Length: 296
Picture 1: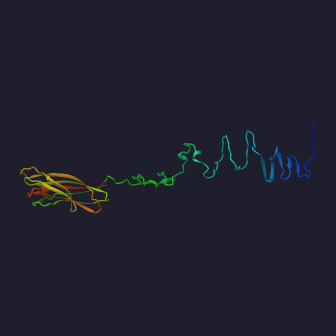
Picture 2 (picture 1 turned 135 degrees about the vertical axis):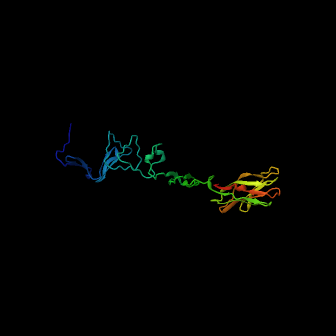
Picture 3 (picture 1 turned 30 degrees about the horizontal axis):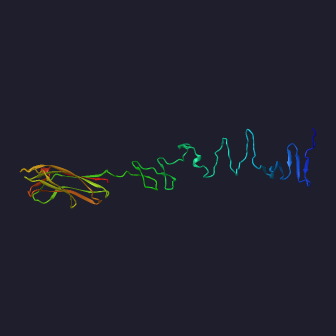
């Protein structure tokens, strides 16, 4: 077998009519291609060259294959095209992705646990605003309830509405005897004022009245709110006999005053059938009027 040997270090082989390409022996290292010249394969489009003192290019028309059990890259990697892999990527550090590059479809179902959510304030609830962005609902106070504030705004903790609740109770008890010897309504003695907290409130009026009536007649009563008659009870205790009758009558009335001003409720009474005898709180027996404000 024939051999070409250059038995001294540093030999240079030059190529071309003008010696524009040279191959220099670097002792104990290798061969050095001059300047920015390239080592070509098949044609000019597939080559290895060094365009500068710090850059090495490997160029191919279609594909460059690296076949090995392990390819170790000790540098930053910049990919300007599309990277397609069929294997598994194992990272020893947390990868950094540009904003808006991880889409919903890229996240597996049930992949994000509560432990991975950002920390918040104890008791807060996550909701969504009109733009669909998540918002935190501030923690409410003890006894408050979560209430919708309508479309386009987050719900909020609010005090439980007073609907249907008894908001206040007031009462008057009267024991003094009141007689009426006319056929005209007179005050019975029980009277109680109340001031509602809202115009939507109702007032439940409960009356228990001690009474007496004359022979062959009845005891007639009416319920007043201020100077307005709101209920009339006729024929109380009527028996059709010539007897004086004593007893109690009781009734309730649910009023809707639509007012937040002070209101006075009372009863008035008279004798029926033009017989001039009627009495309230007979023998000092107590009569009561109780008012309850009911939240609407």
